[in-house]
Length: 72
Image 1 (cartoon, rainbow, N blue to C red):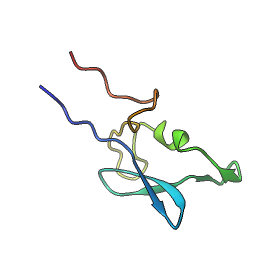
Image 2: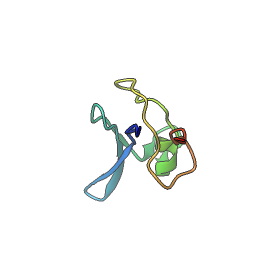
Image 3: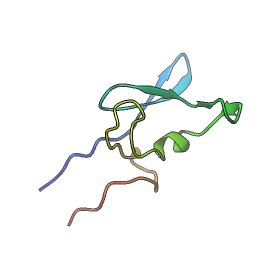
């Protein structure tokens, strides 16, 4: 039985990168005002839950962080 896991979506607007929630469509820019600079997409993929809708979201494929459990 294969369970479909939803992952953060990487999108671009005018060459600026965003991480988009697959459930509600909330977009988080790759800009971190606390650091006063741009952050890597990995920082957004590290988040386990969408801050807007609260659904569980996994990192995009190819990253080692926040991946769904392996199926047997």
